[in-house]
Image (cartoon, rainbow, N blue to C red; front, side, top):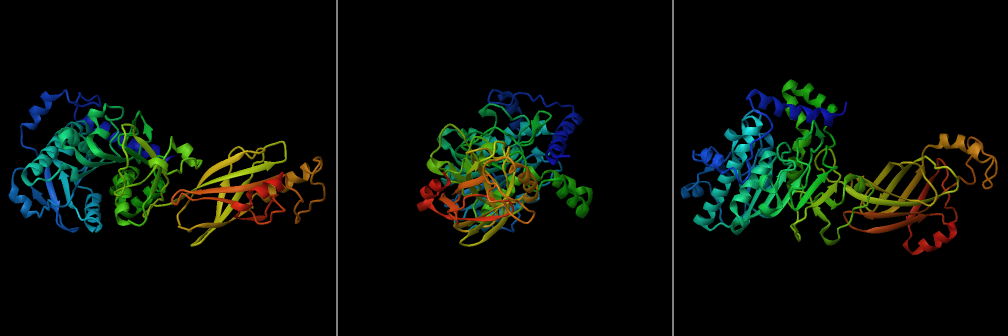
Length: 507
């Protein structure tokens, strides 16, 4: 049974169950700009949102109170530094999750640009059934806007120096805060970490996080797998840059094996944490970008994950790539969202290195050849051995195949490729039949011998490194023998200057 199905159904059922217990349905009343009567009634009471400021990475928070300037001094707010505010999401247990403290520690630890680190603790409003928490999200957004406007008036702190980081439902809270600030007091940046999907998917920009809510909006989508008509994380683009790690639908390492490990170690109490794996991965990818400043994960603009998996989208021209997480570049923004894709590892550090490989084979048989290959890559720093390569549909004549390879290691500049035809025994049996009637490659073939010709030749291997944007061409080390032979490893070396000569030999 696939874990994405089970996890998403589990979380979605939680929403349905909590709503049903309280006599609510997921048909939420309108909560857009037009529902002022409901907001006025609820916000007439004092908000329960607590604004905390953290002096260091071990601090549990000092409360800043709206319209109380003395609390700014008590909490050591520095108006000359930017403010980064963390906003949590919906809660099923009424407790701040572990990741919030990890985020605080990571933000306080980065020394490149010191910042004020704050948190909007709206737990008393988030710890309700989902539909009420969604309605409260707009009210919390208004209170955050009120705090930021007060900071601007009291200590001349510009909203452009504010960065809101909202997780799940908190991402939309951030958007509401931005919309309440208005155009004249626009927030500098909002980051949405797997913004909540239920009741927000396909909603108007006024009713969710959108690019209009800040000068720069980026979003990381990690759990958009849809079942029962809902997805835990929102799938549609909602930012200037929308990042979709591993396609955004689900994440590596969030499978049943990991769930069983959690249960074995922590009992049934671990289920809640385990099933949130993909949803919360957005948070840990962001934290990872803070903890590993020298290993920033690069993402690339692409139409979808299928195209990206062919290695077709590794361009950084005209702002088509960007760093995932805290160090994302603002670039030149437009009204149209940019969807960026990347592959990550299952654990921190999450960075991988992306390579596009293009290979043009010559198949001298009439039928497509279904074969498996393995590649070993030698770089100036490291070597990656025996990467399996399977070309879907088999190899047909004179077709160029493009695919994506990702490496966990930084191998440096690629200088050599070793290419091996793996499924030797299968081809050996076919060859005995084929060579009896084909006009080329006559001769005997014994179990320990190789045929003179295999019917398959590889012209060249073209490579593009995503992270360095370097393009390279590799040709057979033996220019006189372009043929591929079963079970034989062929070495390809850099040959930009000799590529025309090789093509002439193959022809």
